[in-house]
Image (cartoon, rainbow, N blue to C red):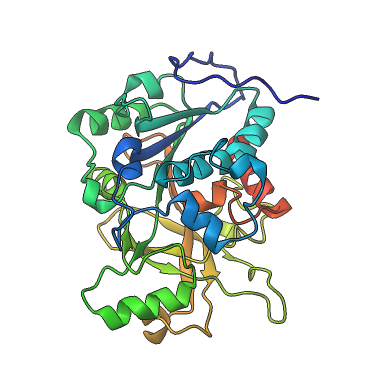
Length: 334
């Protein structure tokens, strides 16, 4: 059977509310033009070009569909890999809910600017905010967006998932940057790669007591290449997000979501063991696990939930497992 025909560059068609069927939307926080036109000669704070991806992961992308006559070879090609890697999640969530997953970008390929406002929120029950804008782009949330999101979260059954990505090499200490680089071991990530101004400002304005830190390599099961199981706290998992989910996705540089006290109620639902055999300041300080999944239950005027989990767990760039699919399904049906 042929895949469905693809459309591009058209207005969003609103999805009608269906009882018991959630409507999911993805919001990529980047400016696609800003990210894709970064100087490839820059050593830090940019995405890889597709040519670099092909070179480092050779011969994985040496197929006709990844050549220059079929696929973008610059940074834009790598941004498209992110889009393509979320298709499996979109397909599963769409089948589970009966609604297609809508996808938005803060500034898209055609230069259209789309803030988070009622055009996105009115037909969305779960909004996934993927924080992959580099700090240098200075894309902060706006007051109108905060007002719109707060109003939306007053609606029963809403869920805001915030996914700030890693913060690698935030120090001026070059030796520490090198240690972090050797710890995660991904040649496609520079020695400084800092995300995301937008999600940081969003968390600040919504009083989410979390700071995304580091880029940590998960531990594996001894003698295998399989990611080590999560340490979960089932008594706190009131939404059943981790039912039949022993692991999330292996990714060499996952953020640690550090909780900073500010009076807001937040629960760590899962911790991921960190590779103990690759030196890193985080483990040198005595830490063995990173915070991977956090939940803020409804409070005050906010009737909706707020979740924090990395966007990597919704992509298949680093593989996919039945456990990961169970997590997707649990979120879509929660």
